[in-house]
Structure formats: structure tokens, C-alpha cells
Image (cartoon, rainbow, N blue to C red; front, side):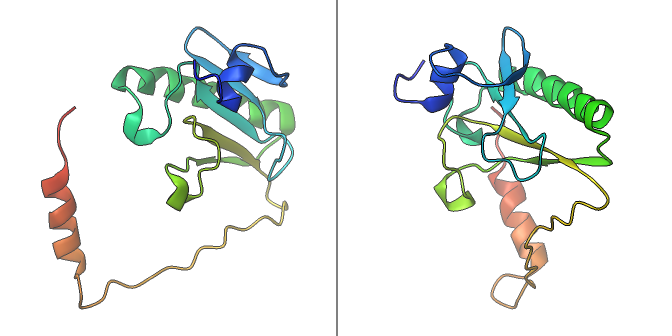
Length: 141
């Protein structure tokens, strides 16, 4: 546990939260600043700042928890779909530095749109060269 971490304090029940799911490895609770009603945050109970620090053993409990929550959001709220979002690092928009996944129920008429601005691969680094660079940088854990 990290004493200064808001989410660690929620895990320890020092700070109240509307918990929707909990087991030995993960905890899920309603976001207090939801994008839409029913927006859930899923976290590992052990402190881990971001995706790059997440131990491989945490993947399965997080994926299984995410699926259970998404299914519950669909059943309980009548969601038509679910967005999964994970911001890793300050440049990606991470504000709380304890790994977390946003599970956001979506509805056909919710009028919520992501503000995506697609870019084109230019001459400075063609798409094939970028793919090669990423492939060469993948390492086993």
C-alpha cells in the first residue's frame, strides 16, 4: 500500500467508495466524476502506478473483473456497449497514479463522443518503418 495513494486508501477502506465488485486481487467502484452514469473504475488491490509497472500476474484478474463488470453494466443499466479506457502516464491523461481501467457503459442515444483527431503517417516515418520499430522493441517479460 502507498499511504499517499487515493486508490490504495479506498482499498484499505480508509476512504469511502461505492464498491460494485471486490475479490482478493481487484476492486471496482463507481467513479465520482463519471463520463456517464454507471462509469466504474477497476483497480488491482496492490499498488502499481501504470500499465508499464503492472505485473503479468495481474492481467487475468483484471480482465476477468472487467468482463464481469461490463456484463453487469449491460444487465443492470441496459447499456448497449461498454468502453474500456486506460490512461498510462501523465502524457496519456492519467491523473491518479494507481493503475486503473475505466469501464464506461454506453447507450445508443447517450450523445457522448470521443474527440478523436486521426493523424496520417507522413514521410518522416512511414507506417511500415514504424511497425518495424515497434516490433523490434517488443521484449518478453
